[in-house]
Image 1 (cartoon, rainbow, N blue to C red):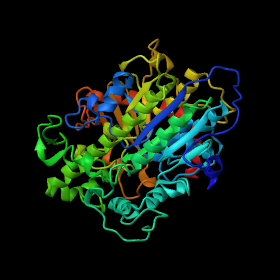
Image 2 (image 1 turned 60 degrees about the vertical axis):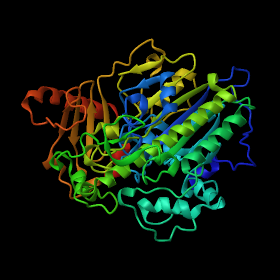
Image 3 (image 1 turned 45 degrees about the vertical axis):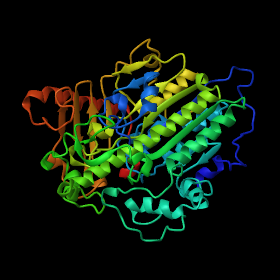
Image 4 (image 1 turned 135 degrees about the horizontal axis):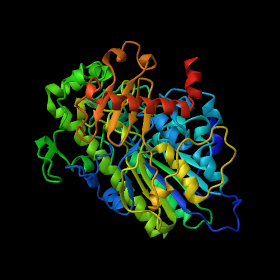
Length: 525
């Protein structure tokens, strides 16, 4: 595998990386820690006003940081969104609009890890990276959840050594029907779980989230003794499916019925749009509503609401587990006196419906429009420099790499593809505004233009996603954000908004002219 030459085997329990910084003699630059979860819907956090979910550590961290209320992923698909973060390039330029896409462009980019390594940082990746080729280069040490990302250094192998391989295989099979690759149970048929949801058999402290946290905490302690700064990408697999929390966190939520949403002491609240009419939804989501998926059987959940409650409660439980481990990581920074010299960012690659629109998971191939999926958590903390509070600036994760380069004055190697994001330094420090008119999130089936007040989902050729979904017949989707925050009133055919819709289409034309679809053209040949 291409990335192995960039990942060193751990020796004992230490993470020491040798080598002298080319910045010898200069003041040590701040550490950078990016904490990234997979599929965390932005609204599912306590400080966001959620009526049920328990996230005390993220709530505290948000109070000390700048929260971006209008941060968006450039596409609602994991690998593409993560790769945009790691390169500062839009998916259309990478040619990466689904998890399986591979292009020559992806072999020629300069990764975030490579840039930090070039600037004398020790570089670490713990957990799910879901990136390939040059996008995944530059790591000194990396440990993944799955074997294919770091054979010999993965969670799957570690959990087998701990004697819990069968328990984890039962979790994995909730979605995949078998154990994970390179485990003793990879060819063992194990039952699926309706809605991909069931209680984990793992003991507390042995999940993928615990694994990411353990490695990150050990690294932070080791780094306290080293002269070189660190860049660490610590990624959690959850709250992505399969939705299999351990009992400790599931017990935080009463899923016995629907309540009024009074946090901590009542049944969980029913999603407001759970029973949205299916004709409102794009074709793939209608397929899922009809049960055309062996796992996401929302048709059965509409017959038995307990399936909805189990899934939603499990999702909340997974978020609470991540919150717990984030608290441990932040406490370790404080204990080792590195808190004031470390930039910490919390974010996700995209969201999850969590029952909104009567949906589960993200329906990634067939839609790319809803706030539940596109509006991501982005919390930025730079000790002594961050403006605290929140901002309504329109940003994307493509902006993160240019921001770090700008704020840390990093030297950048020669780039074949210039960064497409913009530095957020002035916003973060409170001295200016980005004044961006719009952002775009784009998949094979739907490109969405987002402004301060409106959102337009433009239907594209869906054949790359599914040849039978008739998106052009379904038509575009237009929402007035301030009047319809839950996005149930598609006003694309309302003549009152025709001028605004034309303006948003012009924004998209400007976007496509400005950012070349080099990689996308490769795939379309």
